[in-house]
Length: 456
Image (cartoon, rainbow, N blue to C red; front, top):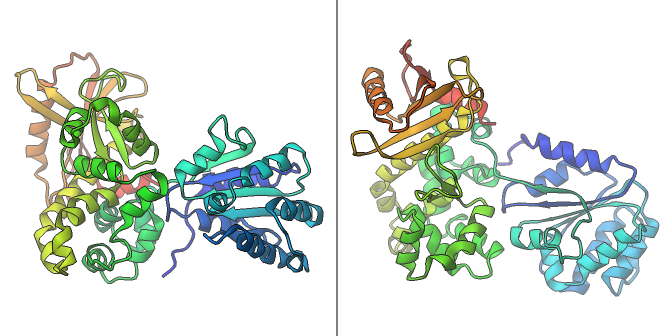
């Protein structure tokens, strides 16, 4: 069941600005697989544009396939034999109408078979012989970045726009799957912001059925998805696969990860940086500490689907191979709930800068952990400074059927009093909770509806 096209207004605006220009330009689009790059391209393409989805055939067959596609716009173009990419591009530029856009989707497949192709496009751009805009697009983020961001790459500095298509924000899943806010957060906690996952899940009657059929079943479409993602972007998938598994299951510090892998911590700097760049993990540090110098930095999985897979699928791989899907699902229900609570807490922090809590604008929020004034370890779910630096927000995040607001506020007040950093700022308190309509003058209550409305 296809989803209707949603969001991507920023990407469309940037593409349109370039494509309406009288000067032909190169545009580069990249991003994680299944995030809607091809859908975006098809959405902006005019009838006179040429859209070509590359495959992994040998170069002569790829050239022939593109010639056939061009022939749909330029009659007879496909009837000529083109011995090389250079000959094909030269012929296309001579015959194409000004204002035409050539869209090369899954461009890395073409480059794998024809490494000279980026240099041919560079030559075309530099000689100013091109009459058409060219869009190159690919899911191999590593390769696409190497083609345009590496200073030694042929296309470095040639692109008028470089657009990374990221997963959608959680607010969109409510509309896409026609769910209430609570159910939308539960769904986002499994599928994350990848539109194709939403599309697949929508064909099933409920979340449980979708999880079992798509992910847990050994023949499910998404059963081996993380390995596909890693193979797209890593020279070797074994180490990043191990790193993601360790982080998902509680080894969050660099020293812990290195110790479990039996490797020096310095050898993990580049792999961790790559996983951050790909959007699979993030570095967290406590509120008020520098991300560069903090000694409390921890790593967490950024992507909900990967978190779900590494916590539920991988540890139960042997059972799932024996087709014990129902048993694994039943055994993992508490983990599902815990993951939803964890994702909800992260959504609460992300929402803070977009909500006028107590009619005040806030900077991005962080978690805080460390020793309190009483010398004991403590955590605070949400802390943020106001934009004018006059206020400090303390927040508690709950994902219970019914939150005891009075007890939660008492707990939050104790946390504020025990917070070790001195402050002369005015204190504001907030509680993010699932199902509570009680009004409270001491504290702002923030609901799933509130959060999803701003995370779009």
